[in-house]
Amino acid sequence: MPADDIERTASEWLARLDRADDASVRAEFDAWYAADHRHQVAFLRLQQTWSRLDRLAALRPRLENERAQPSLEVNRWMARGPAWRWLAAGIAIATLTTGIALFVPGSGGWEIHSTNTGGFERIPLQDGSILELNTQTEVAVELSARTRIVRLIRGEANFKVAHDARRPFIDGR
Image 1 (cartoon, rainbow, N blue to C red):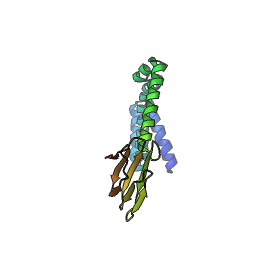
Image 2 (image 1 turned 30 degrees about the horizontal axis):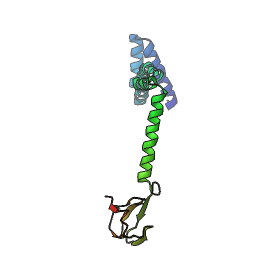
Image 3 (image 1 turned 180 degrees about the vertical axis):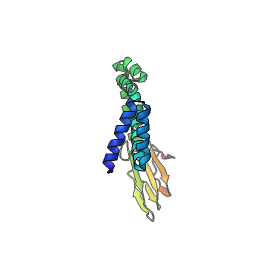
Image 4 (image 1 turned 135 degrees about the vertical axis):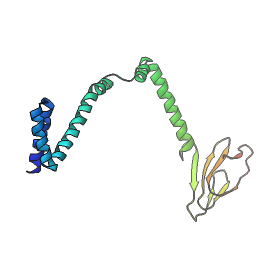
């Protein structure tokens, strides 16, 4: 018997057994089931799929109900009105902008300088100071009107600091 025929017959048996619990039908099924191991495999596979579908059908009303009603937290947030949402959005934007200004190279005055393995670099700064970076070194530099800050992120660096009493040179560890 071809595999398609076995699958079709197994599905017919599954449907018949689901509709009727007659002893004669059960005896006929048992004979078919025992006749070939391929019958057993096909029937068990279909029976497993059928039971999974039953479980999904049982879950369906609950899933549809959850999709239809927003969570309690969302309802509370929406009840606060647009002013709270605008305030929260403003705080989020301010936080993001501050984070970018502090940590992204080239924004807020910060510059990142680095060397690769085996590298050495001498970097003259705008204030006349000189940074010497050894191999695998990274530094962040911020020169502002009131301070000069250098953060050694990794590696080794030497600083030749130009004197400026109005702007201290700060190790920003």
